Length: 53
Image (tube, rainbow, N blue to C red; front, side):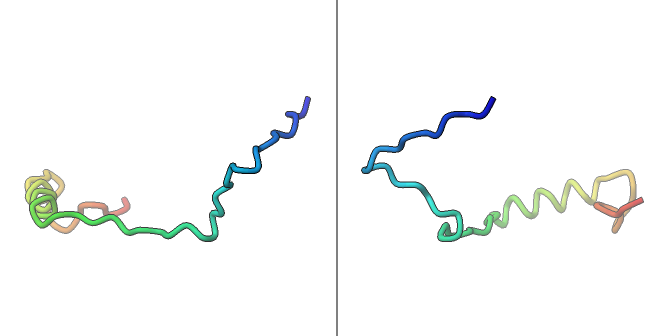
């Protein structure tokens, strides 16, 4: 059974996905260094973090 069409009030604005600004994530230096330290402690060895097996 299909849903009935919703009636938006005239003052309601529908966001346009095409116009939304895409923002990149920003990571602090401290966070990046923490991730690198964790990767260096990994039991799988250096250079294999994220490597497809």
